[in-house]
Length: 143
Length: 143
Length: 143
Length: 143
Image (cartoon, rainbow over all chains, first blue to last red; front, side, top):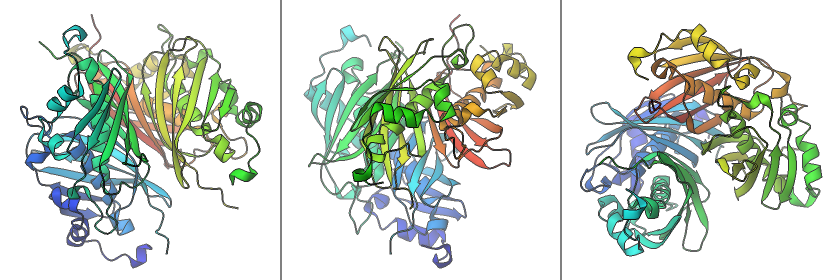
């Protein structure tokens, strides 16, 4: 998909694309902002995220999904769509207690065949909970 | 927790520990086998896993959660519990179509402070969908 | 490069290809074995590998280079050549004391555009020092 | 080592610590700047870095070593020393042609037991060649 033909990627438009997916609906995703080289998402906490019934923190798989999502869709202004994830790294910095999460994604390097992007996950007090990066398959779709 | 005091980690016992967590219940986790250096889990497909409503494959975040879970609990025979994830790497090999998933975790190196374990995710036909590894914090809990 | 045209990848042939590179010469690489899905290399210790002049262990960058090399060339039976590394993960398990190192690489998944392979690094007593995995660009070279 | 007792980490002081190691000498490391949360290093190109004798680019293992070094020593203002690497991720963005390299390291999260830092590698024209992140063991040394 050439940049020229990509319609403007407003938060509303990207949110409409994103929330077609049942998993994205389940995560309660909202698109807060779309920049030329990044994106900011919000995810809505739900009881099923909890891994430890006593200490009540969120499972790292949810944070991994959000790192992947924000890094992937950081490239939407360039690609006009989500792109396949090739691999992902996530670092866990602090326990995620119940509450909505903010995910900020940023392009590190945009390439013709594959690209690198990173993301950070914050709680509502702005505390960094997790961060990571992934490699994405950004070759244009075959006609 | 010393090895001496750890009760025998049967699949039933580990499944009872695992499924106390709401996220683990949501994943429909079953413990198929527990080995001295590994574990085999099964997760029960659900509609909310789907990321792409047209092509119907499962979101990579679910696969990441299962890589993390299987690698983490691969150490249960040694630790008697799940342990905090420090970081995680996931490689995606093929689209995960609707259906239950099998996750096999294996210890790479058990250490006093932190340990490394790996996992593979298969569909019900035995196709490798994803694999990865993580670093886990295995220092004994403070008394 | 199609499999049909790839000449047989004997250890001698792969070693001759590998050791054209000055860095590979500096590492004192020898090819011990070539399998359909893997390779075994040996690297010759040298004083310049030492990072800590008191404790005398080898720098992790040398181990990272060997993980990358063994994972990359694990695919040589399929590709007939080394392939570009897209990204790499390395886990460090034990200090590498002075002495030659063995690196075993194995294909995890061979793909058309990109592939995943892993490697383990051992000392001469067979102790696991490091392990890791990488994503490699395995699209056929353009004619 | 408590922060209070750490002597001021000037570039000269850190360079003197770093260049005690034979591998660091071989890399021709210079310390350009030390910040509270980061470091800038320079490495001096040498012929042995070349992996491909025709196209003349530097082996990814050298870039991995520099990502590790810059991320590790980004914490020197806090730790007063280099710290053990637990694991490392490196993404390769462009071929590194002959010439000196600049490595910028930055702390992502400083923890009591383990910490996360990242690094970027640039050529002398300021082109981003590689980037990555690692987990480091930052527990205080035992008395």
